[in-house]
Amino acid sequence: MSTLVASADGPLTLSPAQLEEIGRQLDGLRTRITADLGQRDREYIYSIIKAQRSFEVAGRGLMYLGFLPPCWLAGVTALSLSKILDNMETGHNVMHGQWDWMREPGLNSRVFEWDLVCPADQWKHSHNYIHHTYTNIRGRDRDLGYGFLRIDPEQQWNPYYLGNPLYAFLLMMLVEWGVMLHDLEVENIIQGKRRWPDLKRLLTAQWRKARRQVIKDYLAFPLLTGPLFLPTLAGNATANIVRNIWAYSIIFCGHFPSGVQTFTEEETANETQGEWYVRQMLGSSNITGSKLFHILSGNLSHQIEHHLFPDLPANRYQEIAPEVRTLCTEYNLPYNTGPLPRQIASVWLKIIRLSLPPIITGT
Image (tube, rainbow, N blue to C red; front, side, top):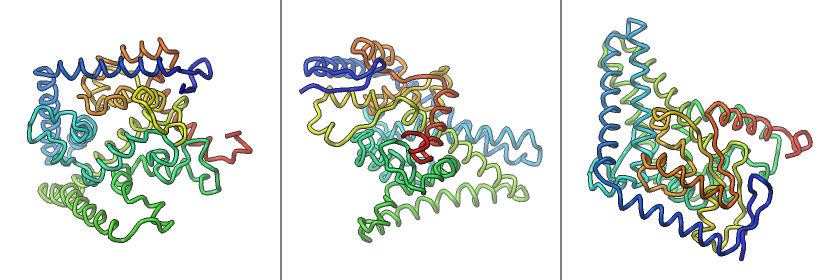
């Protein structure tokens, strides 16, 4: 059996032998990187944790001087960076099991908890299992539109989607809450497909985790600053919003810009390892940028490499990206990448275009 994919130059048929060779080369790349993991990787993740904690201490401390606008702004900046690193570079990657090989209790994917309202185990189910197994398969990957956005032309349009840009904006501002609610599968609740016992367990865990986060950011730390309660509250809320906007932008640019492909269940039935790899490459996109940019994105600016090897330490993605790109060139496969402004503009144009009736847009 051969596989038909859309390349940069149009439809392309890959033979079983080609797919097997793609799988062999990428398996080999994984094996080589896994065998090379060691001290420099340890030093990298420890340096990230140290930076994240330093930013948090600085941000919390500067809030005691929050009556001075420059200090308040510096505190918000430091706290925002701390939350971005915790979410993107530490939390997301640790919970993928990228650092389990170190046997470090604080970096164990089974017990790690992050600075978000979503319980870690629920995120690992909806993201690690469902999304990474069924990447961009319509009807299986719930990250395609997250149950309320029209993000693919194959989704049937209805007047509800006229609000697409508004729904996307609200998700951007409140993404940590959207992540928390994702595993509830709200659209299936509305359709009566979910049972109360399942929901009760999920909702109880969400309530406990969200309560801790709300108390920490919006009550405990503001109270510690005494008369500066309101400036500290505003600073913590601002830092959370900054983190949300950043996380949303990186996630959407890695999954939904122009050129990213989707698939049917029939097309992906009985996939070989090579076909699975090809689907990951076609269903993801990268963002170019500086070394600092890649760190702040959790190296999810290399979303293609992340979807190929979700459990490899993300600091290695930049190293293996040229080999992945060369492989794509060899087999005439698209390697979707570009600077952040271009990718994010592409995402928002798609969101706006797909909000309109197909009779207007032809989609």
